[in-house]
Amino acid sequence: MSRYENIECPVCKRIFAEGDDIVVCPECGTPHHRECYNYVGHCVNKGLHKTNFDFSDEEKLKKNNFDIVSAFKEASGNNGNSENNAPAAPPLPAFISAFDSDPQTIDGESISDVAATVRSNAPRFVRIFKRLEDGTKKLSWNWGAFFFGSLYYFYRKIYRQAVSLISLTVMLLVGSDFLFAKLAPKTMEVFVNASEFIAQNNAAEAQKLLSGVQSAADYNKAIIITYSFIALFLILRVAEALAADKIYKSTVTSLIKRVRVQLDNGAAFSTPMVNNENVNLSQEQMRRIYLSSKGGVNLFAPMIAFLAVQMLLNLI
Image (cartoon, one colour):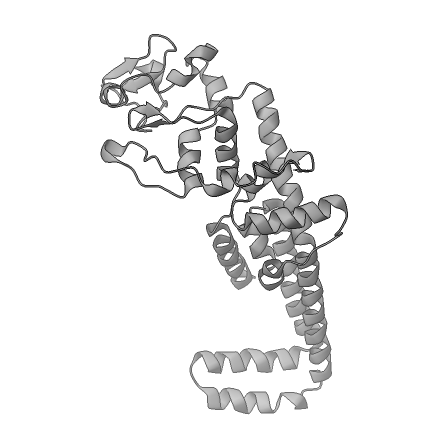
C-alpha cells in the first residue's frame, strides 16, 4: 500500500487509503479504485497510452501534467457533477474558439490564446491589446482600476503589481496619520474624539467638537496634509488606471508563454473522462481550456486583500 501513499485516484480525486481495492492499468500503471475503474470502463489515462505514458514516473507526473478535467470544469463555469461524481460534459465555452479565425498575434501569441486566457470581457481587452501592440495607443484608461485601484489588479490576477500598489496605498494612509500626529495633533485629537462620539450614536457631541475645530492652532496644517494626501491618492489612482491594461497584457502573454515552455519541456494534458467516454478535444483545445482556468478573474483575492489591509491598519 505504501506504493500509493499520498496518491489520489484520478477519477474520484480521493487519496488512496489503507485497505482500498485498487486496480492498476496493465499498460501504464495508473492506479484506480476498483469501483472508479468499473465506472469509467477503462484506464483514465487511456488517451496517453499511445505516447508511452508511464504512471510510475510520479515526480514527472506531479510536476508536468496539467489537470485538464478541473480546467475543463472551471473554464466552462460548470462545477456540477453527474451521477457517481463523474464530471459533467458542458459544451466548450464560446471564448475558447470565438477568435480562432483571427490570424493576428499579440506579443507573438495568437489572439485566440489571449482571449481564452482573459475570459471575462475578452473582446474589450483583445481590442485594447491590439492597439497597444501596433502602437496606436501607448496607454489606455481602465475605469475598474481607477475606482478600485490595487483591488482591481487582484481581481485580474495581476498579483505582483497588486501587492506593490496596495502596499503603497497603505504607506500613504500610515504616512498621513503620522504627519497629522506630528504636525496637527490638536486637530487630530478633535477628529478622533468626534469619531468616538459618532460610533456611540452621539451626533450632537460630535458636532459640537467639530464646530470648534477651526480654532485649533494646527488646523491649517491639517488642511494641507489632508489635501496633499487626497492629491497623492488621486495621482496613484490615475497611474493605476493608465497602466492597468498594459500591465495586464504583459501578464496574459507571459502566462501563455510559460505554459508553452512547459509543454515544450515535456508536459502533457490528462485526458478528461466524461460519461464513460473521452471528451473529444484536440491538444490545442485542451491547452486553451487550461489557459482559461489559469487566467480569467479571481473574485476572492480582492476581498481577502481588502480585509487584510483593514486588519493591518487596525493593528497599526
